[in-house]
Length: 156
Image 1 (cartoon, helix red, strand yellow):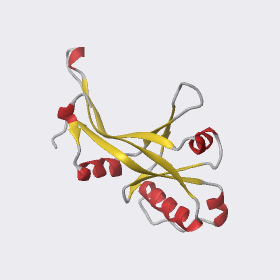
Image 2: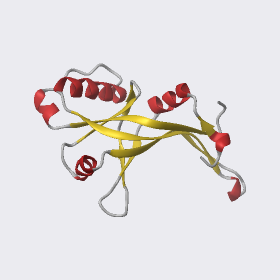
Image 3: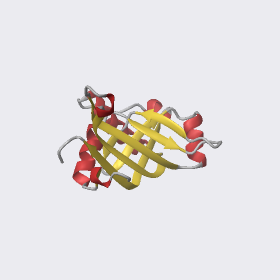
Image 4: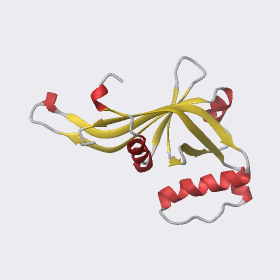
C-alpha cells in the first residue's frame, strides 16, 4: 500500500468494517485480458466472506474455471468539501482481500450460510430454506489469505 500511514492491520478493526459494509466488489479473472468485477451482497462470518448467486451464468462459469478472487468493501464513506477543489477528499474505512472461492455443496451448510447472509439484511431470524430453493442457489465461500484495511479521515 502506497499510503502506509492509512494502512490498518488490526483484525478487530478489519472485522468491524467487514461486518458493517453493505456490499462488496468481487473481482475474478475474466476470459480475456479484462478482469470481471461484480458488486454483490455478502456477509462476513467466522473469518469468511459468504456470497450467493444464481447457479449458472458467467460469474459461476468463470469461478469454476479459476476460483481465485479479490474483493473490496467500504464503510462510513463521506465526502469532504472545501472552497478549493483541490481540498476535496473522502473519509472512509475499507478492506481489500483475496483468496480462493469454494462452493458450498451440502444442503445443511448452504441453508446455514444463507440464513446468516439473510439475517444481515433482514435483521431478524430467518426460517430454513426449502430444498428446492437450496437447489437453485449457489453459495460462495471465500476464506481470505490476506486482508488489508485502510482508514482515511477517521480516528483509529
